[in-house]
Image: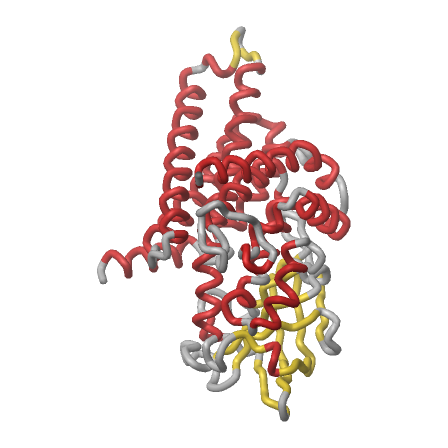
Length: 382
């Protein structure tokens, strides 16, 4: 049953990519993001980011009705990334930005917000990273102070996808202690509507275009009902979000790499040099073999990790292994594709050049490659 459900999710994502990727990629960042979310919602794909109980997709046994299926998310992301980075990022941000509500919000908050996220009506964002806090969340300095029955947030987040587009931000803030204390029992998650006075998004550009930027909290006040989980539980909540969604980064990497390999094969078969197609050159044929083998290994690692997460296993080693190998391999595969295209490979507008830019950030966000190695070493020596 689950295999059929996964194929149905893939097929739906494939249709969206085939029908809309070219149109979306021709738009500017804001228009492209909004159009991407519109077509994803129309196809019902945004529902894979929300548990079935609160308006999400019917998972056919892939996960409980109260959770998001990692396997479904990976199936959709790998197919969307094969067609469009914008489709991919707008899909996953609905889950990444709302999952803290799933695991920490009150029943009233879940019932109010999650169905709207599932329908694509409410754009979500996940606000963790700060200028001084990336891999080490214990350095988070954004502070939330009690003001009667409310909380006042003051601080600066950066590299926040959907900045300026989102309708809600799930925010990690310090409710006690000082930066550098490790974050255990001193951080708390909050759900902050984008319309709240004092919330100021400031966009900037990155190599793979999508809405991203800084978000400043200048005395932003929210009710205690917007708190996600117990006071002091924010680090655990943030890590639980990353634990559920991190392996899907590897799936997206595989989607980018799959498209790069396809482009390489087509180019090497059609491009004639020295009287024969480039594919007939033994060295280039060996390149394709290496790319194919490494990509298939990455796909199998993602399948293993996603299944372990859906089974409720701890899966730290499996997820770190998949994220590390798939993202590093995607950079390798896309780089080889650029090399195969020669001068055309670095010409703006050629697909392999765009793929080469699209994959680079995946080795950094949601846990850099070095962090994945640390996690693996820790697990292997427990």
